[in-house]
Length: 66
Picture 1 (cartoon, helix red, strand yellow):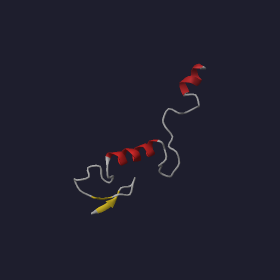
Picture 2 (cartoon, rainbow, N blue to C red):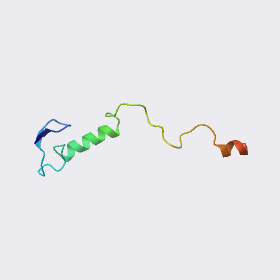
Picture 3 (cartoon, rainbow, N blue to C red):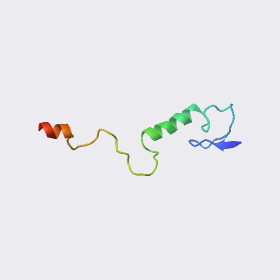
Picture 4 (cartoon, rainbow, N blue to C red):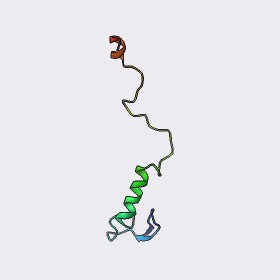
């Protein structure tokens, strides 16, 4: 089966000859990873709320007056 590299568009065979598939090379794989990490690529949707980012005081803080 032949596929195109998502980064550069080069056609490759889906085989052991291309260990970085679906990318044609490690370079293209790292370029794609960098795009995800810099948020050039993103999945649509609402941002996830991370635990520990609450701005309201905790129950223990309100009981002790802190």
